Image (cartoon, rainbow, N blue to C red; front, side, top):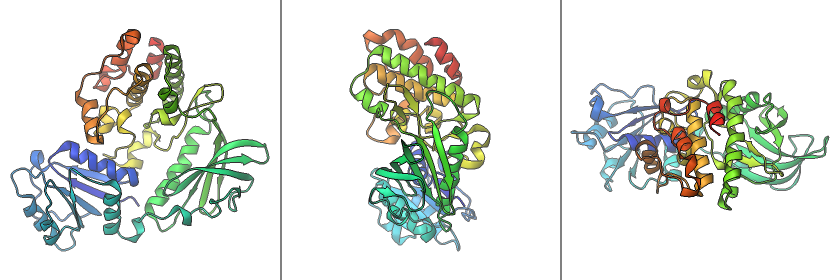
Amino acid sequence: MSIKVMIIDGQADFRTLLMHHVTTHWPDAIITAYDPVTAGHLPDEFSGAGNDVILLGSQQGNRDPMVTLRRFAKRPGFPPVIYFSNVNDAQALKDGAAAYFDRSKIRHNALIDDIGDVLGDSHRVVSTDTLFVGDKATGLHPLIKGFRLVRKLSVSDHSAVYLARKESADVDVVLKVLRQIPDLSDGLGAFDRFLQEYVMIAGVDHPNIVRIHDLGVADDYAHIAMEFLPGGDLKARIGGGMRENEAVSCTRQIASALATLHSLGILHRDLKPGNIMLRADGTPVLIDFGLAKQMRVEQEITGQGAIFGTPYYMSPEQGHGQEVDERSDIYSLGIIFFEMLAGQKPFSGSDAMGIIYKHTKEPVPKLPSRVSHHQALISRMLAKRPEHRLQNAKEVLEWL
């Protein structure tokens, strides 16, 4: 079952920032955001029912936030409250807060640890070492037959990614393994999303979408064996400098892949150079559909208001937790196209909140003069409002 979090603060960007922190660790979290400045203060009889934790900010309009905190804390059965303030307000702990943070210096790991503490043992992070027996050395994985592990590529809370050799075909593959943990509710959600990822892309045959070789499911493990892409990622390729014709060709191919995905009702929602890998011949390939969702079931799975993705490449609507459609992927592709042409991101900042603000408010930067003839296309892809953008990937292809 997904955790339920209520965020109460009068600053929209701060509410968005807290959403990012929560959904980065609990992607299935159901988040309610409440603005006491515009919507008015919650009534005294508000019980917090239905929420697992309340994130209370100090921006409470004309009311002393400590008054709100004390009212919450003294109500029997009220959910634990984590308080955020601009000052070192240790008094908050005395007034009933379960934890306190300086809202200008939030450390992600510390926040997640404290939320996990107040939620209880069922939501704590489990060490990956306890999930993957035999992953510390190369060799046969005891729970996944037919694959010889070469090396571990990456690891997260509930999954690990290996370079492996499929013995029956004598071919290198990327093996993604995830363990279901029956008593860990967010682990179960991750397991379901993992299998959905396979269902969505296994049947897609497109030269710029990663090929899936195999799926296996055991009692508490699942694995996907997918195409090994030895050319590295587009992020590194951009770092080395790209010619204009390369940038145009790459954008055209990824737009073609998006057109296929969108025609099937699938959004990627995490387009970034790190999720575009290269084959040995340089062909760009979309990978990592862990955030992709079928549009028709999006709300049932994620819950209204959840935010996913990477701020540098997010559309304005995605950055503010609003409903997204294929035009959000078009925006992300436009950011990547700009970066390939200019050698730098169009919007940057010192924190996620600042970057999201620039996506929403700042004008689209100008390309260098040598590639300025692409400015019209960039401007159409990076329009702030979805209705002002190119409406689908086919229109991007037509422009190119």
